[in-house]
Structure formats: C-alpha cells, structure tokens
Image (cartoon, rainbow, N blue to C red; front, side, top):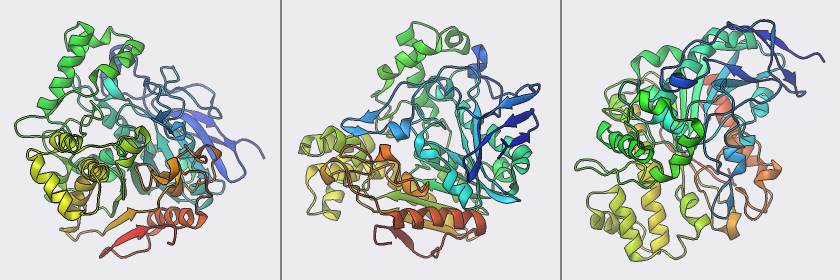
Length: 473
C-alpha cells in the first residue's frame, strides 16, 4: 500500500499507514514561535514546496524532562520531554483509511501547563480511526512561552495556539476525510481546563460542536494579580525586566531551568485561593472564570461530557508516600492552600468521610480543589440552560499500581479513553495500570462512549445521572 498524500492549505504532506489508520505526524498549523515570536500570537505558517514528510515525529514545546511522580512511571504520559526544533506548533492526524466525512475529535493534552506533547504513547489515535473517527492531537506552547503573563504580549498564548489549531482543522480536515461540521473538542487535566475556556468563548463556537472535559477545572484560572506574582518572580530570578523585550533575549534552555524556582509560589490573595494549590506556577490568566461565562449561557448549545476520577489527588500523594504518613497538621496545611477557612473545610470533609485517615482526607480535599469542584460547577452551569445535554461521569476503576494504593488517580482513565491499556509501558508494579491485566471491557466501554458521542452526540447514558466507569461496567 502506497503512502497517503494529502494537500493542506500550506502544502502537501506524506503520511504512513499502519494497516488501520493513515497517520500524519508533525503537520504545522502555525508558524514557528522563534525569537520574539515566542511571546506573540500564533501566525500563519508559510507554504512549503513539494511534499512535506509527515512520517516521523517532530520537535516538541520547550519543557523540563518529567518521567514520573515519585515511584510512579509516567513516561507514557509525558513522552520524551523537550525535543528541540523551532517548528513545533504542529498537529498529528489519525484518519480512517477510508474516511468519508467522518466525525473529528481534537485532543488537547494535559501536563500542568508545563509539559506534554503529541509524542506521548498514550495518545495513539489508531483505535479512534478504527472506529471511523479522525483524531487530531495538538502541540502548543507551554510554561513561560505559553502562559507567563507579560506586559506587551497577548495572554494565554498556549490557548491561542489551540484556537489556531482548531481553525486549521476547519480549513483542512476535509482533505483527510473528516467532517469540519462535526468536531468534538476534548482534553484532559490542563487540556480540559482549556476546553472549558474555549467553551466559554462566544466567538469560538463555530470551531467545534461538542466538548469533553476529563478532570479539568473550569474555575482554575489565575487572576491578573496572581499571574503578576509569577511574572515578577521570573523576572527577578533572571535579573531582567519582566517584559517581552527582556524575556526575548533569554534562550529556551534558561527558561526551562528557571521553572523549578517558580513552583510553590504563594499565589493566595485577599479574595482568591490558589486554584492549582501550588502544583504549577502556570494556568490560564482570566478576569473571570470560564464557569461564570457558561453560567450566563455561553456554550449552552454545545453538548458536553464532563467528569473526574474518584481519587484524583492520589497521583500527587501516593507515589511520594505522602498519604501514608500525612499528619493532622499537614492535612490542615493543604486545606489552607485551597480555602480561606481551612478548619471549616477539614471539618466538612471529616463529616463526609468519617472513616478516612488524614492521608485520605488530604487526597479528597486536594482532588476536589484541583478538579472536582470546578467540574461539578461547570456541569451545573451548563445543564441549567437545557439548550444541549450535559453528561457527567465518574471514573472509579482502581489501578493496582504501587501495591494497590494508586486507585482511580488522575490520568488513570486515559488508557481506557484511547483504548490502549495493553501498551507495555503502562504495565508493571510502578506503571500507571499496575502489574495485573487491565480490564479490556472497560476500555471498550469508555472508548466506545467517546466515539459514540462524536458520532451521535450521546455517549450511551442519560443526562439525568452520573455514569460510573468501573471494571464491572
């Protein structure tokens, strides 16, 4: 079988076939963000002559190397880290070999706004192509170049990249056999937070038609005041003025080296807690949270799936053995990072989970602060308008990783959404899915729901109840 060739608005690309899908890697959707352009809005890519090779993975956004969380191997999620190269604002397309006006799904990866790429093994889209869906995964700017709020630069440049990729999809996806009138935007973690932000943009409604938010936070944006603290700290650490011209002179490797110094900044203000609880110095920077716009009716016409995992924060605690030795004082310290009245918050969680130990309470408090509360608020705000269905879910399957302690932690649902639980890198005592054989039926169920939603707008359960994904189905 000959290699597939598709002509885009910028030029022709040659992909490869894996027997199920036509795969096109590293297709530019915007110009390389080099020099001062690192801090500018995405610009159109210049046309290229001839046929561009789209059979090999390309560069990724500058980012620190992250292979794991403590004793947990997270390399399938984070991929190789930074692969240098200027032309990294790219999309990867998995298309059915005989795609004809097929539904399109565009995935936005997570990684705390500081890491991740389309090269992650978890994001192989072959199963989507098998089920007659054209899958597009997207690289975007991260960390300082993507989300540091700089005077004179557009805010949320990484989010602007996603919007540019969606416009590229509208222009080009028909050439790959996809239907530009049936686009489902979905994302996980930071990617889901950006999905909620795009849902809350009135002008973005023509770019997608359905949305899925996996473990995001529709109230997770920084205020300008909070973002200014990060910008000031970054400028002070580098000894430069915190402006575009100052940062434009700093090479990417120095910006990456700076990132650990920014983690853990106290971003609490008189009126706001830190929505990311100190785990990341970067988020969207907005005057109001996406959920507030949705509550006013923005995005109400878009069918939405939204959900979280049962023990989200286990990812941040269990691999470091924090939950096993958490004291009452540490529990209160965690509560103080996410609430103005930590004593009342801890008392509330103790009443709700009377048999939980301090580590389990810490996980519940942190998981709700990062993902649960914002997701529930978005579901309530969207469903209140009754203009389009709101489908909620809970992913409850317990991963046996780390001696059975990981549970339904953050990211554990991803192999089941992408129907790749058999990926060797996901198996083992310290791997995401643990040493046992993961339930194939759960992957068929969850992946099938996402595919069904893309095809029909309904995932297979009613909008009147929350669907629980467990090994039993």
